[in-house]
Image 1 (tube, rainbow, N blue to C red):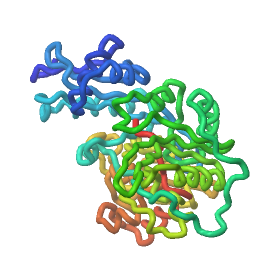
Image 2: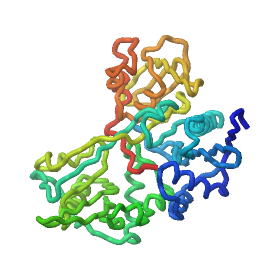
Image 3: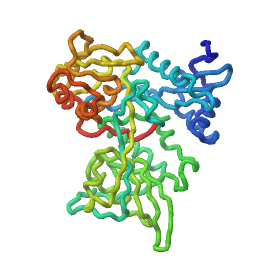
Image 4: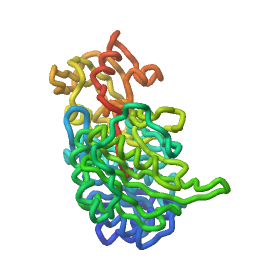
Length: 406
């Protein structure tokens, strides 16, 4: 027990009810049996930490055992940080810091996953612990019946709308084929699929249960919320997830959704480089606003940087600052070969670039460019041309995209 009377320990399965209740209160939700059920689907008590004030659980944080697709190398182990919350009335007592410290120290000391990532409820919190903004997404609204430009190739087969049980084997196979190809995508265990597809009425916000539209090489999961006014129907169709492994499947699935009866607006959450706007005859039929998705933390700089591949051969020394995990502070040489493989070693050489570990996490997936951070004054160039070389090396073919918040 610390001087302030707080203790931290690893949770057990018996802590699940208190764990779920704390999260409900921390996120201003009603504690329900369904919430407890949802948490139980993915709960890893041996990777969860709780802070206690006496016998009361007042703060929690969990790591899910997942894999993430990184540039050029497919899926690599990820510590997916989730279910982080502090009970109202106990904030600003260092509770969150203790949870973050337990997670990162444990991963480092045990040689666990070299990369951690999370979705942030409040974006100002997690840079304090070394997380950098690595991926973004946009919220798009598309006017129903919006026309495609001439020449868009559609799928030879018709899109079919099927029931959940018929859809599941199809969508799982398609996702398992696509996820290893898309930077930022996570693998899905059976329990994860149950979590993703859990569809209680309270989560529908007045819309229908999830519907499924499928092709042999693509699928869409979506909801419909009906609405009417004096000029007729103006319902909203909200796309929960759309995955396609061919351009024809992508175009056909969106065409099916755009033409859905009694709908006025299609809402889509997608990667920044989503091609939908380039299918439209009039791009102004689609409006977009951006948001942040994945925040990435390099637990161990040397172990993390070698998990991905790089776009060109470079030999650069990064001067890294890391206030929260001081084992990363120092100068690290990144040497990559023509195949994109990397070797990372600690050196005494003068750095070509100086940056915080926050910024190294931000550029890791290729979604945030070193040149952008340099323009913002976050990366300091000490050797002429180093920013340009780092930008080319860290680039990814497409923007990173994580289809699920966890």
